[in-house]
Amino acid sequence: MQQYFVNGEAGRFVTIEDENTLKHMFSVMRLQANDQVVLVFEDGIKRLAKVADSTSYTFEILEELQDNTELPVDVTIAAGFLKGDKLEFLTQKTSELGARAVWGFPADRSVVKWSGKKLIKKTEKLKKIAQGAAEQSKRNQIPRIRLFEKKQEFLNCLSEFDRIFIAYEESAKTGEKKVLARELALLPKGSKILFVFGPEGGIAPEEVNLLEKQGGLKVGLGPRIMRAETAPLFALSSVSYAFELMT
Amino acid sequence: MQQYFVNGEAGRFVTIEDENTLKHMFSVMRLQANDQVVLVFEDGIKRLAKVADSTSYTFEILEELQDNTELPVDVTIAAGFLKGDKLEFLTQKTSELGARAVWGFPADRSVVKWSGKKLIKKTEKLKKIAQGAAEQSKRNQIPRIRLFEKKQEFLNCLSEFDRIFIAYEESAKTGEKKVLARELALLPKGSKILFVFGPEGGIAPEEVNLLEKQGGLKVGLGPRIMRAETAPLFALSSVSYAFELMT
Image (tube, rainbow over all chains, first blue to last red; front, side):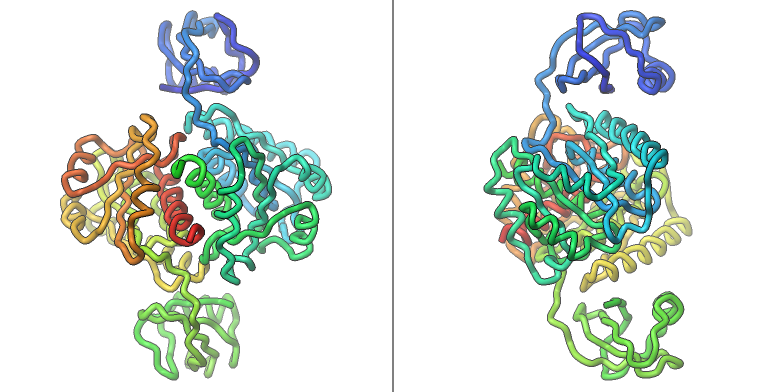
């Protein structure tokens, strides 16, 4: 059944106002009176709803659903700004794989520079991609998107995490393979985890130092070198394997 | 250091003949006499080599390297034919993530049909993508590519595997989450594993039945619905986590 995220709180009746959502519902999916969908309000609870009036876009909430597909840990993926549409790709795939937030920051080796209007426009684009992917994946939450104009703003946010993992290619090369699995096994459910990834050229040693000073832990993600946009998918899959499939 | 796969066997001196490889070496990377690269012959051993003569494209082999980045199990990813360039995407990413073979087959719900020349052309394209990704990821092996024109040809190949996992969306929906981790924990290193994925519309129940008759095991890959081209990345990451990071 089709699922849609809706702003605000659930009442018995709710009128959808978001234009993109309306377009998908009534133009693409051609919903008619009494057709059912799943609506997810800001509380993250899925609710079965039916079209009460297809001209005023009003739905009647039928029941709360118990279904929760969120990872038991809260994972933020932070990536250095990537070239082309790689951040779009990354946002779509990490949304499917359960990220709670996707961040971008201007890393030392980032080739692209975004600021001002361009940054805002890119952020809006990524938010739409995250919402679409989260709806398709039947998530309870839309990943939060944030692009930092300055690296310092990103660094200022590190204290909110219980654990920071730095995906460092050099760790992979030297055969460091145990830290991630060991640490994931120790983290309780509900933990806030940050994974930091470099841009195409990798994360710079000075950036690794800065992150380590804030408690960041270098981790290898296996012996194969992955592209910048692939490594975050590996990390999220690993978290899911450790917290959802092995328990 | 740049790595290249080379046909044939290693001698003390070797002359590169593949045009794509030569182009990358001498036009893109502008190799000159005495520059070093890693060459990987069909035996899968990495060897340090230097340019002996840049006009005849001759290299001198300097030493064998011990470095092996292959997964300890032999994983084949089989996917129903996918629309657009999704099989290209899948080939690149699964090559980075360690697949030993990438197969495509005409699944019941595959929208695209490939046969004859088109199938050969697509296969050649995917082979090049696999080689490029394997070089970038510093693999010891290039994933083998095979597109089956008939589903029966694909089914005839199932007996070569020690374990067949069927990624079945319905298993995920009903909360099946334990089978994959349990089975991976039981499989010895060196096992040949096949993961079968459906096309965009998923694998059909009749196909699941056929695969189960050949010993296939339905597995859920966590509670979130992944796109057809994303699920194989999750599966390979899980195998890496189980066999490389947890051991």
